[in-house]
Length: 297
Image 1 (cartoon, helix red, strand yellow):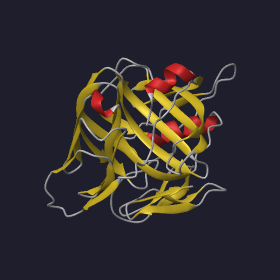
Image 2: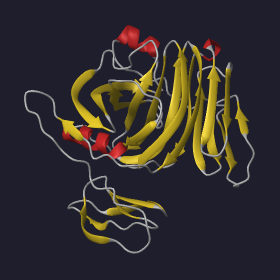
Image 3: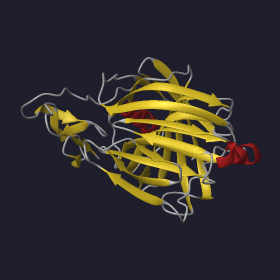
């Protein structure tokens, strides 16, 4: 989670991510689970979706979670807040979302997640409020995906809070040049573009469509699901040399076994209903993320 105050003083993209001592876990997996209301930092599952809510100060925030949907309202009493729903673990999947985002100051809307080995914190940011989260970071290229162009940035966090405690790790950003709230995010396009720029990722930890606000107030209401129309996109390496790459094929959903050919790094290679390739290009292997999604890692 991103601390705008630290950015101002340190001139680097920073996150104030932490797991408070009073962090709790909720599990409401039943299909008919009612709407869940959360007001303090916690993680868990609701109706099959992983959620995370973090507050610097446990006040001023209300998060309602339904079936593949959440609404978040916050004010400055929380200092810093980030909440959203998604998957644990995440993957190089295509994600579709819709809803509203009403920032009242420093806040943004992004697909947010972590990898381990190496430890990486990443953002695919579709919209933000009064503060550009790329301030103080290194611009390394662009990626065109899902009808828009994203600027790619990287920075390093030194002795900072992370999902593994205080650590030094890389932070990666794709920030959309024209803001939007809703659409498809073909995550493999971004992951491949980052890789082409030397930004290595590891094994996926959690991945959420997140709303964050720092010393501000606002609200959002977001519906999210896996799947959608995959956009192969193109990527551009940093100057002076430009390259164009295509994201790995995502295949189609249906019945039956896998087809011939090989899947590229980050590409899907299996899962219930998968009809695409089931073999990965060397040196990657097909690893199961969940019954519906395996990918080349």
